Length: 523
Image 1 (tube, rainbow, N blue to C red):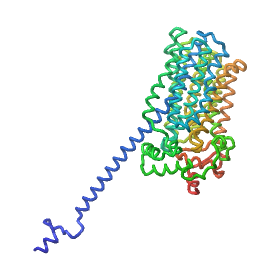
Image 2 (tube, rainbow, N blue to C red):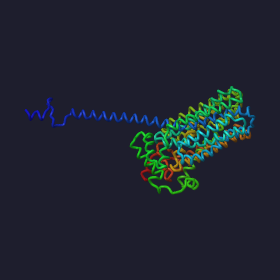
Image 3 (tube, one colour):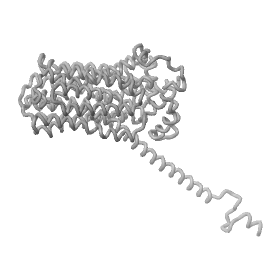
Image 4 (cartoon, helix red, strand yellow):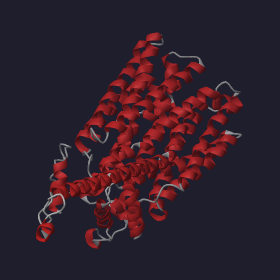
């Protein structure tokens, strides 16, 4: 009996053999651990997405300043003319000078962000713009108003250059495209707010209303001050400063999978030259940009070219001078003019959401094709409307539809994708200053268009000007086909490899994911 009791339990189940009930208990325990781990991973993923999302929003607040200035000036200029008695040439200079002066902010922004960091460059941008906005609000004359515009332009130059770079450097690969599009969303939101502000304050006396319109632009800067206490520094900039532990800490917050953090950190270190010092020649950044290697030359052509095409297709002329365009189409009443511009702002802002939803699914290049082809058609239709249809109800409706269609197609593609591509393609050690050069090209073209639009339109008609914009837009389709690679789904370090080979069919402009995998294996 004793022997039997040692071999079996009370239920008759042998102790010395494998117990199926014990196995079931172990399986249940394993399932519970897996479920707990999965639940923890889901919570971490949700927390990470919210954190990165918040960083992208706060980093994009400077873009509201640019958008608001573009939108509000289109209406405020009507009342500034009436109050300060400025000429048409002064009007062009006042509108366009902001883009021209922003060149200096963009040029200084690249070097500044390499010295003080991406985060504090955004703070500097907000401070300089806020100073300019205060001066414009209180300006008693055209000359003082111009001083305020100069300061605001420098601040905007800093802001438009640094926001996409910061977001691209802090975002996980899978969501980088949509997150880097946020500055363009906020530019569009700012434009819409500017249009609404014009309409809301247009009923006030002419010597007060435009000052209030400009003063409202100070408000976003306050939120930027709060943002500085929330957003971290770029992990890639921290690596460049050899602050590896801080970079790792930021990557832990911005990557869902902890196992990828060290891998990503090693990639960044290698790209920065910390892990492999002889990867790059010991040349200054300025010298590299002035005498680029073949791969860097391709990057510069792509980045600088797409930035220029974004503006020389006339988007800022359409937005800044939409009241003048609608007046040419036949709308006379000031309130109706400003109401029509609100419709333009709504279209421009609404369709940017399409780009955000599709940029990481459909890809950068398909959106660029849709955008540039659509803009070409709409600009041509606007030329026909202003040249052929006259000032009747049909001409007015066709003009409004053409302008709204043009800004909608812009927002779907080249508007946001331009900044995404420019922030992605350059090597880490050159990214800030090379992106600054792209921003300079963008602002130069914007300023030239804004400062010459009325004069050119007086010389060849508004319709003729938009026929020219349509032809330039058609050229941008070819540029996208030939020189813009697809960067969807690639890390910033993998994208750099795309430009370091001639094997990828650059002549046809087609780059596939498999090519990157092939390159990484070769490395």
